[in-house]
Length: 153
Length: 153
DNA sequence: ACCTTCGGTTGCAACATGCTACCAGCTTGG
DNA sequence: CCAAGCTGGTAGCATGTTGCAACCGAAGGT
Image (cartoon, rainbow over all chains, first blue to last red; front, side, top):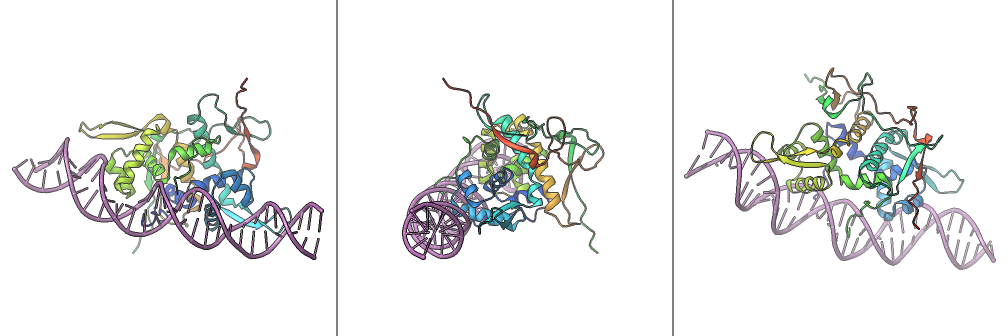
């Protein structure tokens, strides 16, 4: 590859997000973090990922401000990984992927995990993309515009 | 790598989505498709990706039912790639990543593209994860549960 | 006819991924 | 308190994937 191409200077926020999260493993780590996992070993067992890969990804997520390393909550000398506020803001991304997967990647009746409301165990409502006035918009209702760069003399 | 690990048999919809989309290039292709791009050359110029990579990704997206190959709309003998309904359902995913990137990956005043309402050029409202009753939920308000596999006699 | 564009394919080099071993601090049972 | 086993990593290697550049046939333009 002569170095995987980076998007961290792209002007498109989607590209930068993609670059910041890193790769798919990272997103699954974030998913597990939302699910309450905090320890290296928990992630490793849950994902089945090689430990060196997990090490790399955790470091990248910490460096990127998505995770934070804190002293363990159980009083042991180990450390734990928790989501920063920035990392918690990835919730809609994970939910969007989850809903898409539920809708398109399982045959009827196939078992799968589901994210539900803790209070009543009912599934969540579908994510809606909506305009400033609350109207639900489709891709055709939107346009990408460039925000003017500040004028240079 | 001895083969990149696949998640297409995972019971977690997030993992399957991740697997179905393939990699980050694919997601940027989808983003461009939402932006109206349809031709091989358009994607190639927009992304700056090597043509062999683009070829691979487009084929994978077509095989995965995200894109469809159709005769060109301008009457030429070439073919174009358009989003299938399944592909269009990725809209919330792309929007979620875009909003996250806008919120966390740009310094104030840094220029970036923005997705706006076509009718009034105003930015979209933020995606909200909500329960079945419309209440906005945070990660802490939710739990992942396993859906029972159908009982086998 | 000639040249350009479009949409790829092929070959190669560099790099990332994954596997398996290994290892240094904790922590725990006896 | 001492050994055994966790926990959280590193190190080394084989293989796969990415990326670059060069090439190529068919369509289109002039």
